Length: 375
Ligand SMILES: *[C@@H]1O[C@H](CO)[C@@H](O)[C@H](O)[C@H]1NC(C)=O
Ligand SMILES: *[C@@H]1O[C@H](CO)[C@@H](O)[C@H](O)[C@H]1NC(C)=O
Ligand SMILES: *[C@@H]1O[C@H](CO)[C@@H](O)[C@H](O)[C@H]1NC(C)=O
View 1 (tube, rainbow, N blue to C red):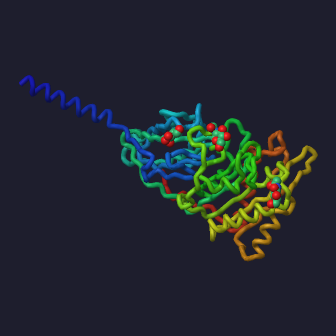
View 2 (cartoon, protein in one colour):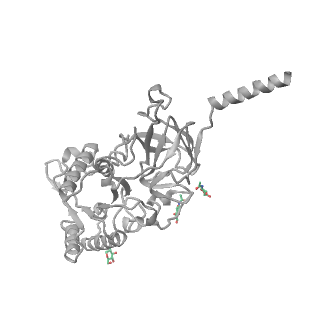
């Protein structure tokens, strides 16, 4: 009799503890429902700014990100966006990180009891020198990963610091024009962008390789400063969600490092040919320089006509799917930092707005909605 009672009590307690503490959902990095973008190495380490992943989750209340010790120390800034909203900057480090999910309505909320809610979480590394190494994700009990359906549009950006908001201390990359433009068109994006990089393969501003070399590698040039991963590997382009449109902006640093015009011409020509082999049918948009705004309202330009001429020749030779995007007049003195060079957030927004108009005139329409619906 006594043993029967205690067995009964024990089972009730076990039952209660199951109700109150359903085990959290552990998601391992090889889970096919994690939608990775950008460049990840074989150890689930991220390279290049903007690299990250998307999750489509049912009944999401909480998200913990566990990062392995090879993650850049002491911490890495990531952008976190909930349901395609603005990115918030969150500092993460090796070990457990609780990711704040502002805007998520708790699935335990009575108003949502009758139907499950689903959320899209976007997480991106912000700075080019930072790597996160993904160990696992932990979701609240009751949460469930669903497939993420990517947009039909997918933008690939290649560039230097003029494609990032490099000097903005609080929000290094999230407000950069490539991200804004992609969000405007509801496009997936990949930003293979390296501040300081030349196009030609020489050391510029301490960046060990030019984009003509590094674009074809998994690792960003910061590999040279990594004790864990001090080497490059060829990027397997078949791992990309195929881009539909290619954006290019580079050459500024070559000018600063006195690369002759003749060399820049060859570099543009060869690089565009390589891009065309990789992306046979995609439009390539090459942004010309908008110049350095001066205090007197004038602009300083460089490599005048160089990229334009290379593109004109390619078009004359039959590749009519590459376009020179003239950006002169798009930004002015109050759109750059006091270095008279780098776009401030207002300048990045202006550049994005101008590019969006240009693309619409060219014939590209924003998607009406993201295909992964959230409610
Ligand atoms: C990486 O290797 C290069 C030589 O290839 C060396 O100069 C550099 O100091 C190394 N970096 C680190 C962080 O060990
Ligand atoms: C971390 O780096 C070491 C090399 O220092 C390597 O052996 C190990 O596999 C790396 N861990 C991950 C998760 O990539
Ligand atoms: C420019 O190209 C020439 C000829 O290929 C080469 O010898 C020279 O080193 C290059 N200069 C720079 C700065 O890249």
